[in-house]
Length: 414
Ligand SMILES: Cc1cc2nc3c(=O)[nH]c(=O)nc-3n(C[C@H](O)[C@H](O)[C@H](O)COP(=O)(O)OP(=O)(O)OC[C@H]3O[C@@H](n4cnc5c(N)ncnc54)[C@H](O)[C@@H]3O)c2cc1C
Image (cartoon, rainbow, N blue to C red; front, top):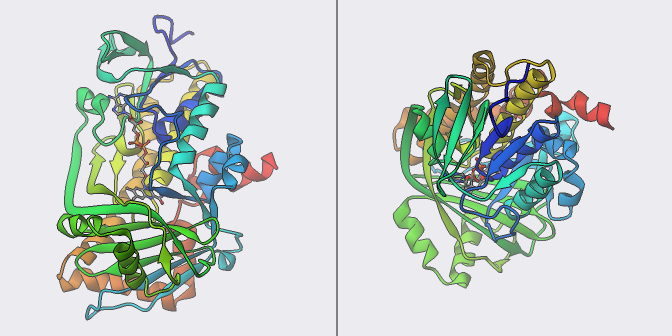
C-alpha cells in the first residue's frame, strides 16, 4: 500500500543542522523521497564556528556508515583520555580522575570534529543521496485527515509527507505549531567557545575543570598543538571575558588550565552560547518526530548534546525505513510510540546527570556539591565504577543503540 499517495515527499525534514542533515541522509539512502527545509542558513557553506564536537564511538560509526569519517579525519583529533579536575575548593572536593580509552580496550573514546567541517560534509552527503533541498523556512504544520502532515513555508507554499522530522533547533517552529509541551530551565549561564594554540602537547586528552559558581572550563584536543575551549560562566563574567584583549584572554585561560597546556596563544574571538535546558514532554506524536535540539537542548557537559541528537536521527531513520521496507505506514502511531519510548530512556537520565553536575557547580548548596564530589571520588577510586561510566556514561550500551551505530555493524562493514 502506498502511504504517500497524496504527498509530494515520503519524509519532510525541517532544519539543516547536523541532526537534520544526518536524519535526511539516512532516510534517503533507504530509498525514501526526502525533502529538507533548510531554514535561514546555507548548510553547504563553511562558516567559522568555534564549536568542535566530541563525537563518541557510536556517532563515529554513523559517520563511517555514511563514508564521511575518513574525509573528516584530517581536521579531527582522537580523544584517548578524558580528565576531570575539581577546582571548586569546596568542602566536598574530589580527586582528579582520568578515564583512559585503553583501559576499556579501545583505541579512543571518539573523535573531536569541528562543526564547521561536519555540517557541510553532511549536506554534501545528503545531496549525493538524493535529498531535495528546499531553500525556505518552515512556519507551521497542519494535519491532513490524520494521514499526512502539510508543512507551511515562509515563502507561502507548502510541502507534505506522511511523517515530518522537526530538526529546526531550540526554537523549533514545527514543534511550537504542533503543540508539543516543553520543560525549560534557564541556568543564567553562557558557554564561551573558541579555538587556541598551546606550547605543550595535549596528549589527545580533554580536560574538564570544575569551577565554583561558574561552571566547567573544558579543553578539547584538535590536530597539532591546538585545542577548542568550552568555558561556562555567568553572563556578566562572560561580558568581561569577551572584552579582554587576546593576550589577556590567553593569560586567563592559561591560569584556569593550571598551565597544563603550556603557553597559550592565538586565541580566536570567543562566541557566547546561552545555556538553557529544554526538553520535550513527548518526543514524537501525530506523525511529527522531534530530533536534536528541537527535542532536547542541554549544557555542553560530558559531550552529550549532538551525540544524543545523532542517535535521534539514526533511530528515526531506522524505524521509518523499516516500516517503508515492509510496506507499512511509516508515520503510524506505533512508530511514534516506539521512538518516544526508546529515546526517553537515553535522554532523560543524561539530562538529569548534566543538571546535577552543572547545578552543583553553580550553587553553594552543600548536599548538591557532596553528590557531585562523591560520584567523581567513586570514579577515581573504584575501577569498576570507572569502567561503568566509560562504557555507559558516554553512550548507551550497544544493544540500546540504533543498528548502524552498533559495534557489530561496524565489524560487518569492515
Ligand atoms: C560550546 C558548545 C560546545 C558543544 N560541544 C559538544 C560536544 O562536544 N559534543 C556534543 O555532542 N555536543 C556538543 N554541543 C552541542 C551541539 O553543538 C548541538 O547539540 C548541535 O550543534 C545542535 O544541532 P541541531 O542540528 O540539533 O541544531 P542546530 O544546529 O541549531 O540546527 C537547527 C537548524 O534548523 C534551521 N532552522 C531554524 N529555524 C528553521 C525553520 N523555521 N525552518 C527550517 N529550518 C530552520 C537552522 O538554520 C539550523 O540549520 C556543544 C554546544 C556548545 C554550545
